Length: 170
Picture 1 (cartoon, rainbow, N blue to C red):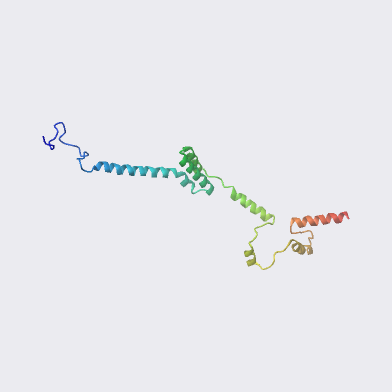
Picture 2: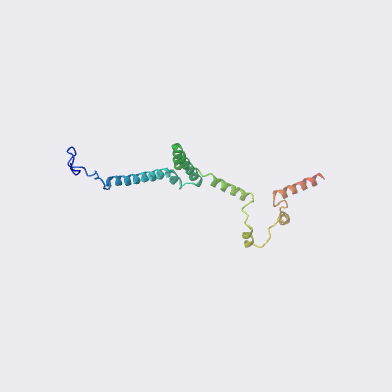
């Protein structure tokens, strides 16, 4: 019997996905490439979905963005989805800004107390070449005016008050 003879039990027409011996299996190669591409697409989708809270918090405050980013990293490395959900919720909730009003209040109080913003020495020398008045020299011009009790600082005021009390006792 010859080897080229076909087995009587074999079908006479074979499907196209059957590969003859010694030929390249095209379907296997196509499915291998498809599988690699799909796994890469799923990984990219996973990381894009994982970075969603950070992208949402990016337009918010820096502190909020950093907290959401840390929660995202923790959830990525621990595979605990609770951290990701907390980061997503925090990204949607705006954190109120307390520091700006408090800074404005502090600046206003400093201005009212006479402790306004001091210029650096380079800016001061550019504005004027006059030396800054000291506490004693600042009190002298006021003494010549109608209000003799005006002093430049609380320490000088306290010293003047102590002198007045000691004169009254004497």
